[in-house]
Amino acid sequence: MTAQVHVPSLLARAGTASVLTLAAVGGTMFAPGAATDAQAATLSMKALNIAASKKGSPYRWGATGPSRFDCSGLTLYAFKKAGKKLPRTAQQQYNRARHISASHRQRGDLVFFHSGRSVYHVGIYAGKGKIWHSPKTGAVVRLEKIWTRSVYYGRIN
Image (cartoon, rainbow, N blue to C red; front, side):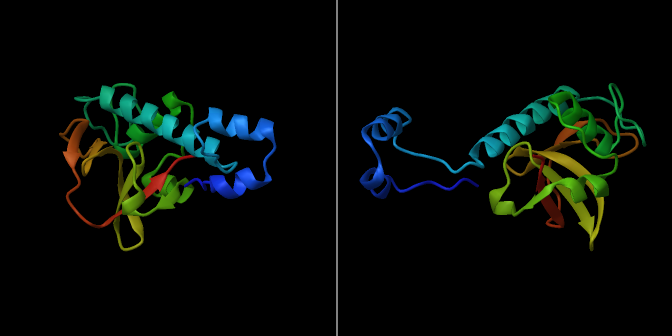
């Protein structure tokens, strides 16, 4: 999340050049972490689109693509193609992700399914309560509604 600077208090301390710069960017300034959040959003959206492009690819335990996947193999493949290396398993990916609340989830975030504190499945959030994932033997990569409340959300930076 980015912090915004209140414009009137800033203008009271700003010189003419700063005021013109502020006006040119629409009157809002962001804290230094803003670029990182924007980069994470772009990375995550790329990964989401890559995962979606694998629709119909068969599940295979331990597979990391390009034509067969298990759950964490799909997320690993999608983020790698988007430019970010992830660890191999769903639990390791959860441990690496920045944990976020359901109310702050965004498209492209990872959705971790858990039993207690143990993560057993992962998918990529597609919006509207749905994920792209590779669910199980005999199934294919697909878009599916999240079927439980026993999920954690994580963002890859």
